[in-house]
Image 1 (cartoon, rainbow, N blue to C red):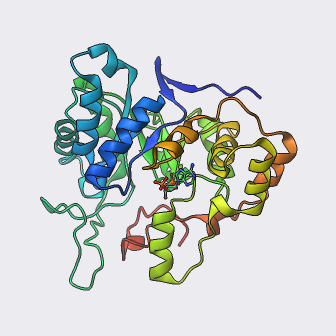
Image 2 (image 1 turned 180 degrees about the horizontal axis):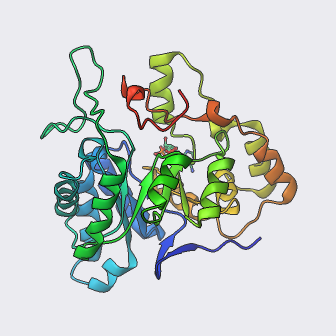
Length: 323
Ligand code: A2P
């Protein structure tokens, strides 16, 4: 099964293996991005809420130098922070991202989450005294989407899309204008078949985040909640298929996503693993292997990023997941 290496968004090519950047310190990230550029990554994913846009921007700009053709090779994605989900704040947040990244334009700008925090300048994750989030319950998602769409008129963003939304929310926004892209958690334990089918019906390309199971987040949540998060990379089926192809478990997990028709943004800070994760074009999983991997799905129970780390956010009327 040959798998195209790009999605085409309105004439622009978005590589289907991108580089994820959540949860890395600035210094580590700059080195990792340099290694990723060397390894051939051209699609980089960040967010205002990750607080690393400046570090990513420094690494990208070192590579671009004075060559505008090199900027055109890149596909850069960032996202509105949860505190910016208000029509009067979208442009300010967008300009902040653009400035920190040190770029003239963004390739894809996403609404990061459908819920919202109160806007507190200088504090992207405002909390109450009891540790719960200061949640803004008044979000008008359609109004936010209309404002995001307007950003395209400035020429400073080429495409706009959404992340972490459920099917009803995507349909609601699509009635205004279809998002150019949907970014959601997808991996072997959380296969999102119904969301992928909905996106296919709407012809919206899907990017999988946490494609390898985001160990740091899973460990963090496990420590807080006592819940068990199996390591995707250690699943016996994944290891068996990896051995059969002389590949790594990460390559098997990524290849499964590619053959399911989605893009993926693995992150790594290790140059060898960074290279491995983009070397997934020259082998193929057969039908039996795809079926064995499909059987690993745990549905909603397999979701890692359920936002339980934002205490109280599930009370928001736009909280996207089953309560
Ligand atoms: P490291 O940075 O040490 O490579 P996700 O992309 O799902 O968020 O997962 C990222 C996690 O997976 C990180 O802990 C990263 O650790 C690890 N990781 C990334 N690539 C590989 C790989 N090829 N093999 C094993 N672990 C990997």
